[in-house]
Image 1: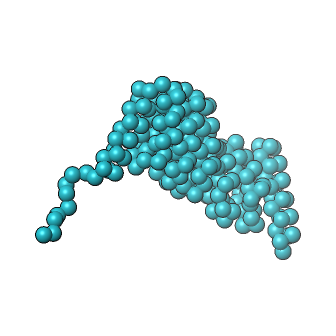
Image 2: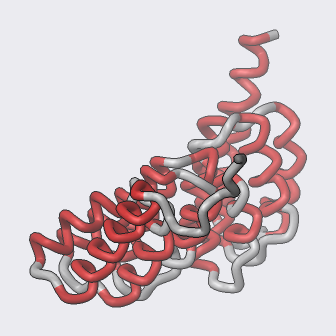
Image 3: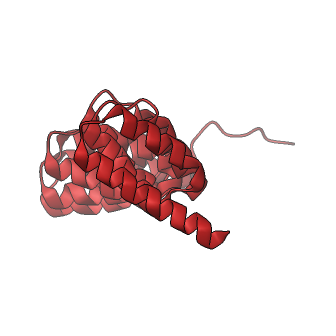
Length: 209
């Protein structure tokens, strides 16, 4: 006689669920060392992302916070990057630094969120996102920063983008740089930065030619 599948969970499923429950319990009521260990384990269980997302809203100890960001970077998916990206604009410098470090550690997962970060209403977020673009493939980075510079009205954000482009910019970005300079005719620092970046990009293009 052929037996149907049992509706009872198998030992592996039960064990995994129990493990996740233990991790969640340690995160909510454990000592600092227990929470730190739970965070490291959370990256390896199916519900780990939700556990880490919640933990990041309540954790106050620097060591554990750092472990949470590291675990999210280890998961390395667009979903984990989305959790981290929400803290780029944090008023807490430690959280902001942790978020940026984690996003740098997972550039492929971060890529999906860069357009939104570069359009954020907070100019500080847009400025910090320019630095994250540095870790993207050259062509994608140029497209992202070209789109930003086309209409960015904060000179310091433009300067952050220009700094990155001075290192990774290609010849196609030169008209965009000139358009940006024309939008800020009274900003000598930005004009200097754009001139320097344009010279470097032009020189690199000549060498490749």
